[in-house]
Length: 403
Image 1: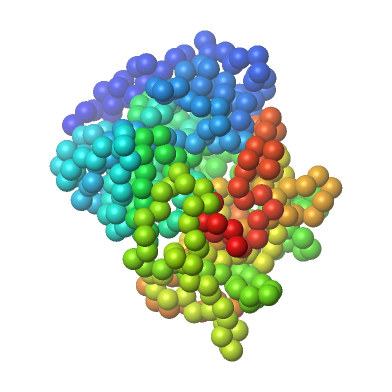
Image 2 (image 1 turned 90 degrees about the vertical axis):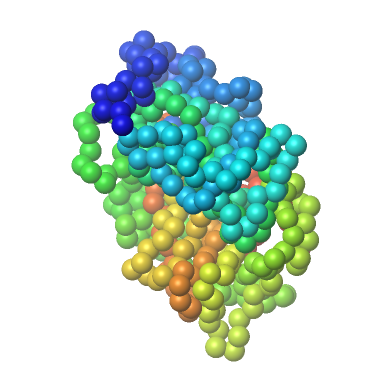
């Protein structure tokens, strides 16, 4: 077992001295001098400076307004169970005892529902000492009920890499409802980067996190939702069970034992082969059956101003034993129209955990927490960059034909 000193040497030996690093002209130095989430132009600077690297090279369309899409490597490992390496081991140290077999992804392969896989990612990191990484599934991944998490060497939590991390990245993939087809280069999750300056914060605090008082000011200035905002430890969102005319639809429930879905195919599948339409009964309530997967929508239309990002807290036992979001990341500009009303619903990926649970229209089901960016991105979420879910209502993932 390596000592703490040996582990640190291994992690940071190749890490460049931050004082010697310079950003390209396109990224003003101020981007790296403030606390918060790094925007697209800072991510490009990190790539140019070797803090994010890959072979083949990172493609321009992987860079989102405040995150980077990550690509699957050439091989997937079917593993016995999910795991974390912990502070004294690499991912590959643990992999040998857990893998069943290897799957070649260069020609495409099916990952079966209910199985757990580990895939080395093409991208690697060599972060400076004030930048950490945090990952989420992409929106389309979450809407397929594919549970995807980032794992990195010596880490004791999922979807996070510590400040100054240098090393490879891995995706743990568990399709829950649909079997999926993936290939070398497929993109299932994304990573964002948080810059910390100044003194270390207290345990549990997030650098750049926006408090409730500031959220109320932002809502007063630009409108986070239409009408009054319910703000308590973030922006609280309510479920919409109002029937959508003319069909009376309120949501979708995934069909079990449906066909395989190719994650790179857009608009290729008929929704009714994979989803059941959900309508309200006479009691105007929706009963979530245990372990079933639903696509529902928020009552509020949401706006994320360009200087901020938002994240949905996926599970809050204080409001119910269910999970409401698997992707959870809202880009700067999501639903935002300068001078206009908020324009996009939060689509919710809902699963009741162990017991049936009743939802009623307007019930609070989750909350958005906001983080500030170090600067406004040079591209924001919207139709101009091909964003699939701008101005969305209740909507399935991009893989399905729109009805």
